[in-house]
Length: 327
Image (cartoon, rainbow, N blue to C red; front, side, top):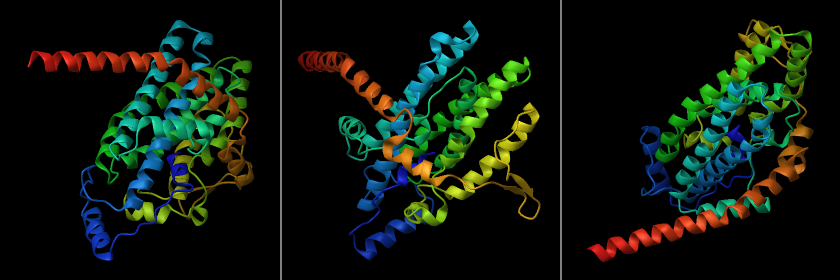
């Protein structure tokens, strides 16, 4: 999912070879890099881009699910979905805070999102058309996110790695919640099972696109892996996800919408059909079905919340002034 954050990343750096060798030695020794440590500018820029894109994805990801809170079929489902959306808002805040330690402000990151300079995960540019999508998004989208995020708990940049520990725990709950929704539909009436299958048909290919382009086409992955920002390649993570998810679909009695999906005994995993990369790049570049709606809604939320931010800053200033006066 957040491999997409490396698309267009600038990992170039101008430091001396001696400095770069010392830095790489720390990375190779599995030492965490902290915000006050000396680091190559390319390392910092890569992290700002990836963490910012990750944070934007959590915040924008609230929109397609928030759309279904008032239409959830039961109070239990409504409460669980509301809790999930709140979790995602919290994840965005953790990640914005981690990025801020690198010297970029939240206002800068938000402006880049609104202007289109910064991206978020392409998966959130697809519409959620039915209640079954709430299950499939949890099962597939959060499942793919977990596959990406668990290695990030060992990311070389300390604040990012530490933020991911809590994020991963909560994302695991989200994935189980989604799978339980799909299971209830798959084991329900024929109409409910058909709804679950339709949702799987629409979300399968966008979900496996979340891991980013093939390794051969991913220009910045090698440097990011050398710096141990990421630990596995795009294709490795995609393969892990497919191998874990196909048996889950079979248990539900649902069919993966890939006629070329076959078990490869030699590699111990599934071979899959060709991904439509033209669709992937079209959506990444902002031409997905819901792209304009997502940015419009984020801009509106930012503008509508201006008074809250202003009030919070004014309150903090009053507290600071009182503390100074009391000293």
